[in-house]
Length: 208
Length: 409
Image (cartoon, rainbow over all chains, first blue to last red; front, side, top):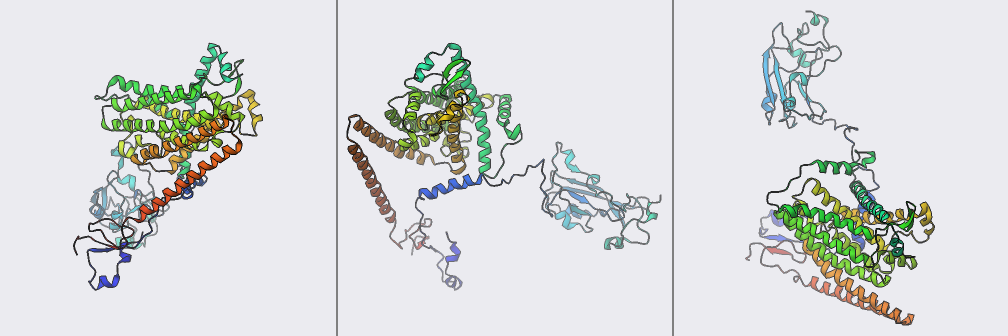
């Protein structure tokens, strides 16, 4: 079957002469009942399929890797010295179409410096019963604090367990990172942090 | 010694043992059949199918059965309680009964007793099978009626109409076998095929009609209108749960195995080996014939699965039209031909006369078919004159250039 639009006389249509009531048709050879051999073809399809490699992934035993940009569980990232990237701006929560994110900002004080600059996310919750994994929160995040991992095994047996707290979402401490709270890298401002000038923790940051 | 005489000497306990064996074979075959069907259908759809419970998923249907048995047994408030309970029992027991006259092995040694694995041999064995399978329909009808609900009622009605219509075609296709074997006893029919040639070869049209009607008879795809889940939810067993549902499930598969076994017996030489492999029948003290028998039954079962994997469901009217207007008339004509040939043979007509008769039949059939074909073309070209549009809005037609949708000039 050909598309209607292909058959429309383009010139006529452009000049406004086309009759809106006349719908053009092309003659199509109407297929009669298929011959017996052709009907047998369908049986051959199913029969030959039996000897093809099947597509099933034996899931709990075998886990096929996801696409690299698969939208999985969120992650709250850290700066290379261990400070949190989240500044508690709530832009992710505002961007969320499913209202799945709750953020409460808190002040960074000299004794409680969780992130570079003035503010940090004190409370950070994502409700995975609501989340639709659209990624708008990731787009909204001004500090790249929030990204998504490829982890998709999020099922659980209690609703409460599916509200992920900040501890559940925070990225693990890697080589050269110190667990916050600790002071900012000496001589560095939050802008330096943002620009990626901080490469690792300074020994003085770990002193109590 | 014929099988009937052989079975006549069975003591009571052997009969009891055989009855249990037949029952066991049916139940185990059902479990295996469900697993096989799910695996083969999965293969046809690039899937794996059940492979978790037991080796390669073999115990899946067993665990399903246990699960079904443990489910809550619900009887709807609107249901007719007694009939509701009796219906699945009728459906299931009748399928098992059909198996009683199927000869599954040749002469074998069963606990030191020389017998054949066939519960009993009736002179009208095949008629008996037709009778009990027809009673099995009561199970379906009563289930649909007693559920006190619309969908089961419709499903039950459809199913009974379907089984009755296809039972006619099935019965007619068997008539040619009776004429040819001059017996209605299953073991005699097997013996006559062993002497001559498989009925599937000489009575090929009967064979084809039987295979088609056995699919219709068992309510299986593409003839599974009674359980059309898109239209009737589950059909007659919508309101059934737990063991009663399991019974219907069992009945369906035992029925499939029974009609396959009947097809094997009547058309594929029963428990006998393929021509040329007759020496295998002596292996395992004659028990190897059981393997031959089930190999042939499985062939039919594979056809069932293959049909289900390949074909969409038929529309109800097309299905009925096919049964009544194609299968039955073709069967009748075929019986007429077979009977005439048989009479000619018995009257001692010369071979040339028989051949002339057969040739005449072929010519007449060809003439009729070509006439029908020509008529078809006439009808097809008479649809609409080329280029002329109907003055009402209709969908695309092959011979029409344009359609004035507004209805005026």
